[in-house]
Image (cartoon, rainbow, N blue to C red; front, top):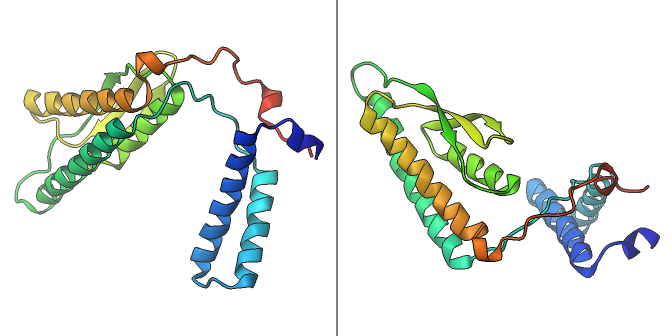
Length: 192
């Protein structure tokens, strides 16, 4: 009870939601919604959350729903378009497209949004993020088609559009409140 007192209501709800989510994943993996599976799922969720706690991440902006919906549709469009391009490159006659590692300067502010952007870029076929330099805000991305300046410019334009959408959805200047209390090692560990 002493540990719960140091958490606010939002933190308690978040932890409860995590338990419920992990329990649902467990029962869905077993494919049978029985009482025994639900109890086992709850026990597994408790073990995971107590023994493997996630570090607290600073959330420094607000989520804007309309921008998030626009982002989701844009990512979906890029995924379909890129899937068709990669499929065409796989079946067309001739040599494979020229690929290379490109460096991109990022303008997102938070590490959380940068991680979301890089994961999104990786799930879009034709590009894989290889390395991220957090201090300098650089990303090194393997891109399949760099055979022409137009193809390289197209990749950078796609990245800039995704970046603008992520900033619009998560990091608007009006709602931006930088974290003034950096995470300490003691904040990320649970007391047992």
